[in-house]
Length: 503
Image 1 (cartoon, rainbow, N blue to C red):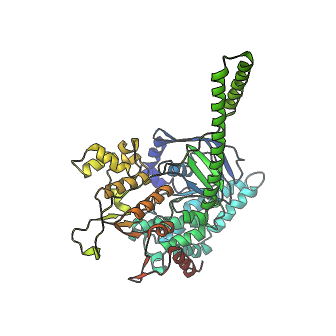
Image 2 (cartoon, rainbow, N blue to C red):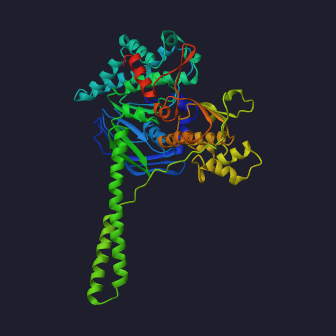
């Protein structure tokens, strides 16, 4: 089942839309019947902008990949291209790309998870076709039967109920109609269905966004055991450390592959970049010395001129062989909230207290046909354009990104527009509800730094253990209609959740 491409996509015109937005090319270099995929000469364009140019993608069976890159580099677009089979992925490999919540219907959440009729029919037809082959279907037929067994009605309900339970659905909620759930909970049902389908290739884009801490811990433990091919985009370093066996880094229009989890990737990348920088400096010194020698002695005595010519040949050879490139550093964004000065406690008694609240639905407030700059000018009339440009720039949105329609910005870039809009009000207290959704890892670190340097007050709701660890002075637990203070750090609380769930 390709979750990103279904009949309702076609009926609402999505199918047509995506074809014109994206162009994707690549050559399959692995064996068409292999369970490992290697695609070369991969290029990806979105709205006329090159996101990837002539690069390689390797996905091996049994590996779990974390896809990393700065906001706007094209991670979600790449996942969509894989999910829509715009890349040459063998037909025998089924793909599930989780893109939207389960539709609101009269089906119970349990029924919605188990509703795989379309997939079952497809597999039965495939089994029939394989049986008719000269070799009797071989290994491919075994795989199809394996997947049909997984959908066996006698075991399906138990499996589906276990998955839903892990994602926070009790017995009563499992019997409730999907139309009676909010979008966030219907997204959990869709995630449960993706896990229930157990596809050959599972594509997840920020799967923890709609989850609470308990469900995040359960999902991390579940995905650790995923034995096929998983590609996940996540802003949570903690989650990537727990789940991933490999990292794919999207940078400078290329895909770079690393073995290991997030921490191992950081270490390996740092070592490789240090060696690359040393080699680059050595080459540049050599080139500078040779050029200086050629300029000084190229027209001197015969002996010196001969040596200068020899150096010219060496230089040409070096350039032909390809010089080491300078290390492309990630552009580190600096968030900055304007200091507000101290207020004596109790702060909430101040009538004039300026409070700003960030929540997940603020993006719906944006007029996506407008540019970020035009939107800020409309929201804060009477201000000069340069002042508004600076306000947006403080949150890492610069140049073209400020003036293009916001519908062409990534979700992470839209989040930054919202932060700029909030910060311009100079709040004394920030209420942050899941501020890391759609932000890349580097941006989250900048946000943490800005919050730590800022002198205002903050209440944070987050499923990102690392951000909580970076900024929270106290941890409050809301359960059973009461709030209690947790005596310990957030990693201790994570361990407590793990033990409580019996993981």
